Image (tube, rainbow, N blue to C red; front, side, top):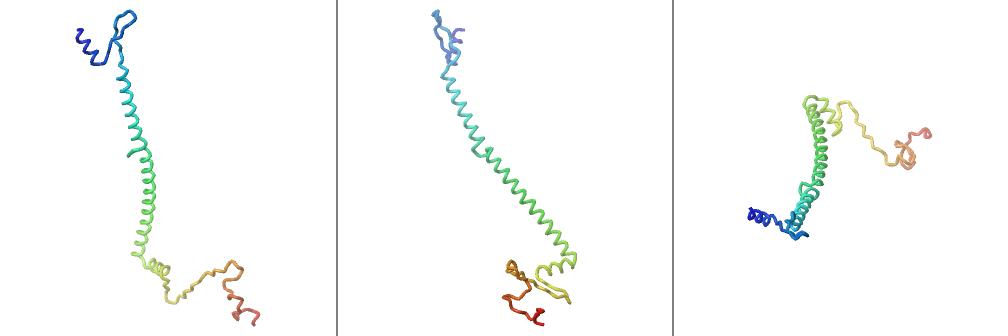
Length: 148
């Protein structure tokens, strides 16, 4: 029995201390072993914190990827809306002549027989008080009531 107790003491680092009465008593703790254990646990904790906050798959990266996903989803939604509008326009152009004629009128300025096409140009000097239909530089166009 004594041999088993000695081998357990050696294995777990238990040693005998002398009490005041002169008897040796085994100590329960090996403080150097605990120091090593604390250092190892601290290193593991630091490593896990590094992975959580900085490394691949960290909280910051997950947050950034979620924001990118939301931005891409908004872009996709806009593209789907545009695609639906274009598909409706294509169906309208395939099915009716009026839509095709309206498109030709707006895009390339086509007119029907008997129609008159008027092209208006905005004047760049609207802010100086002149009428846009008045002749430039005060020239008389011969149509004013003073010439009659």
